[in-house]
Image (cartoon, rainbow, N blue to C red; front, side, top):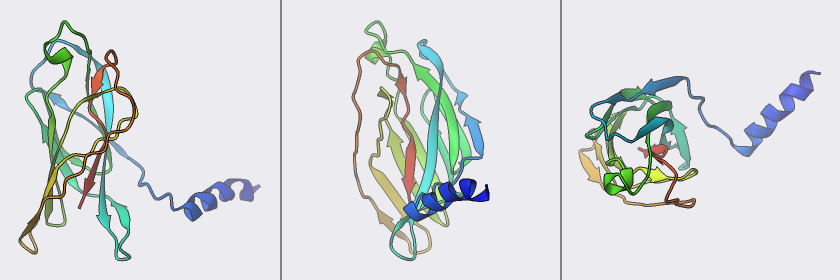
Length: 168
């Protein structure tokens, strides 16, 4: 009987599934309204670093804040879920109802990473954009840039902010 519950755990361990469970959910505070807010949308915020073996590993404890003219997210600790508004998309709204980009600033063990996420219409999008990093212990800056967009854009689905993966 015990093996029935232990086998899935062992299988996940063998596959290298090491996602840290998300314990906290935060709600972004509203600074202003566009008038096309629909309902809330959850954005997953995770942080990653290079392990001693040179592989990418998820780390917990990065502190992130984000803001734009409409919303503010203050001092969330990764991994976390952040509830942000979802925005209706239609021709009758300025810019089809698309909200402004959300500017993130995250810090972890003396390193600071800034990145920007654009709202996307549709589900299943993974967006990573330009990142600048400052390492306080070495006094160095780096600025790798990558853009990955998967999924299909729709002209009718609501706008929502994508999940965030911060690389340290």
